[in-house]
Each structure stands twice: as structure tokens, then as C-alpha cells.
Length: 500
Image 1 (cartoon, one colour):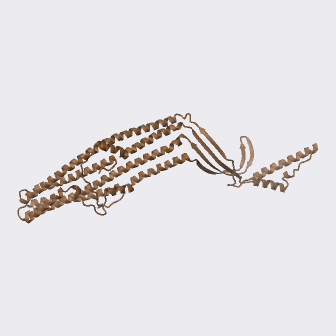
Image 2 (cartoon, rainbow, N blue to C red):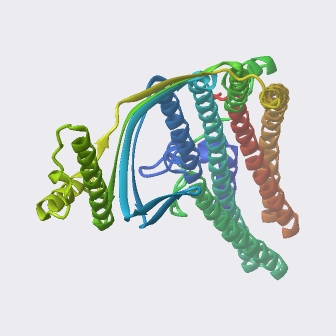
Image 3 (cartoon, rainbow, N blue to C red):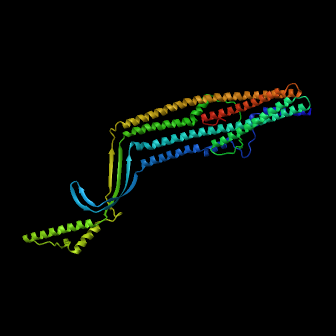
């Protein structure tokens, strides 16, 4: 009798546990566990794919800064060059200019320029539109990532609930095996009943082992979605209550149209495409450009001997000309001019000519001769360029129309998806309510089967069937409850805000 009372107490305790709501059966949050909010926060700061998407925003911000600087500030540049020309005879066509030495050359240019055109006026607006489109796209990716983390968190939590159910199943089969052995000891049971109970217990232990492995695997996958490694035994401490969804489809659609990130991204793409059309039309506007700068250069002979020879030859020719001029002056009775300064036979005169040539040869590479300031203004008006502008404008219009059609398609898809998700959520809620009733009835069935088995009114087959029925009902209830929460998470992702 004591054994029978103990068995009944265990059965009633099991039924009381089955009657407890699912959320209440979860262990209370402990220090050091992981909540869904912490998982999402970690994913937002550490998910590599999201961080890679955010890197694109840096490029678009730089494009905005560059477009503004290009519009409001002139460009400035400096250049320097070096050159070399070998020695040889200089010719221009059939004319020969004599032998020239090797030359080293260098130069510089420092200037500013500014160009104003319709495309430049539109560039900051285009850059801002593209930056906005990129930001909305990143927000859409982030929302998808958050939804993925939430779904995986629920999946891991569901696997933990199934592992807890498997533990309860092992406890029930152990108790049934103990009762079967007790009946065999007192002579009212059979060895077959014991063997059936042992088989049932072994199957439950295998299922528990597999479910614990599934739970650990889902926790590791949660870490992957978060963008960091977490231990397989990490405790998930968030609780989720089952409640009846009372929203209307129109309410949710209105929320989604205002908050859905993907829809916002499509709108930003349309705005950028329309800006592109205006930018394409700006090609008909004239262009005004301005340039101003300083230039300097130096040409330095590497070998002065040919220059010495040319200079001495020129001085000698001038000396001969001077002498002839003096002869004519004598015949005409005119005074003579001094010619000694051209007489290169005089070493002092020759040295003076060579010194003048050497002084006239600039130093390389920084003996620049600066040129005067140069400046210019150019005004150009495009007239015809082979219909290239028209082609670009048409391409921009096609892109804008495609973006508009894509936005309409996303709006239709969003409405359909919201209404479908709401139907799925309501179905999941109803299924969870019904499964709760099924679990209660399966628990009552197990209690009656165990009582009949205790009294010897039935065999262990009926208890085994009742255990299987309760196990399947509990697993179906867990699946139904988490289908509700996953459907709710999917609906939250569509409307772009929390609904809990």
C-alpha cells in the first residue's frame, strides 16, 4: 500500500507540472544568463555582416563631403618636371642651326582652377540621396539581422523546452519501470511488463540525449547569428507570454508602411533615382571654368664648349665687321670705332666672352626663370554630342520608373505579408490553446492507465501508449507555443516595431 500511495503521489505531481503554463515552467532568470535583448544588442555591435554593411555608409559620407568641397572650393595643384636633351645638330626642316650641347631642363607650375556646371550643381544633391538610400538599406539589413537573431533565440529556447520535456519523460518512464518491478516482486506483474518499461525508459534516455545535443547546437547557432562565440551551455533567460492577438490587419499595415525598413529603403532608392533624372537634365546647362597660375623653367647646358665656340665665332665675326667698317670710314673721312673689345685673339677678350657665356647659363635644377601670371576664363555651351545626353536622360528615367514600380511591388507584398503573418499568428494562438487541452487530457489518460496498471486491471502496454501519447502532446504543445512566438517575431519584423 505504501508503494501504491507513493506512485499515485508521483503521478499527481506530474499532472500538476503539466497543468502549469509553459512560461512558468521555464527556470527563473539567473545571474549571468543571456536575454534576447542582450543577444540583439550584441549582434548590432558585433555581427560582421552588419559591420560590413555599415562600412558602405562611410563611402557615401565621403562622397557627400567631396561633392560639397568640389562645388564650393576651387581646385589647386602644383607640378614639377625634369628633362634632358642630348647634344647634336639642331635642324628645323631643311634649316641647320648648328651644333648644340646637351641640355638639362626643369620647370614648375602652381595654379588654381574652378569649374561650374549643371552636373556639379547637382552632385551634392545626388550624393545626399545616395547616402540616404545606403543608410535605409543598412537599416533594412539590420532589421533582417535582428529578426534572424530573435528567431534563432526562440529556436534555441524551444530546443531547451524540448530537452526539459525529455527529462520529464525520462522521470515518468523510470517511475513506470519501478512500479513494474514492484508488481513483479509481489507476484502480480510479469517480466514482460518490466522489459517493456525498460525499453520505454531506454528510448526516453536516447531522446533526452539527442534533444540536449540539439539544444546545444541551437545555442551555438545563436552565437553565430550574434557575431560572437558563446558557450553551448549558455542559459537563455527571457520569458515570453502567450496572449491573444487583437490587432486588425489595417492597423498593422499602417504601422508597417510607416516603419518597415525595407519599404523605407525602396522609397529612398526612388528618391535617388528621381534626383538622377534631374542630374541628367543638367547636362544642357553651360559650363564656366577659370584657371590662373604661375610657371617657371630653366634650361642649363651640360657642356659649355659648343656655346664657347659659337660665342667666340660671333665675336670674331663682329671684329672682322668692325675692321671693314673702319676701312670704309677712313675712305669717307669719318672717325673709326674701337674694335679691340671684339678681338678674340686677345686672351682677355676671349676670357670675357667665355665668362659671359658661363654667367648666362642658369644653374640646374632650381635656377628658374619665372613667367608672368597667366589666367583665363572659358564659357562653353553644349549644342550637340551625338544624342549622348538624351540617352543618359532616358536611362535615368527608366531607372526612376523601375524604382517606382519596385516600390509599388514592395507595398503590395508588405500588405500581403502582414495579413498572412497575422493569420498565421492567430492560427498559432488557437493551436497553442488547443494543445494545452490535449496535454491535460493526455495527462489524465496516463494517470488512469497507471492506476489501472497498479490495480492489475491492464497490462503495461496501455501505460506505454499513454506515456507516448503524453510525450507527443507535450512536444506538440511546445511547438505550438513557439510557433506563436516565432510568428509574432516575424510580424514584428514586418511592421518594424515591437508588438509585445
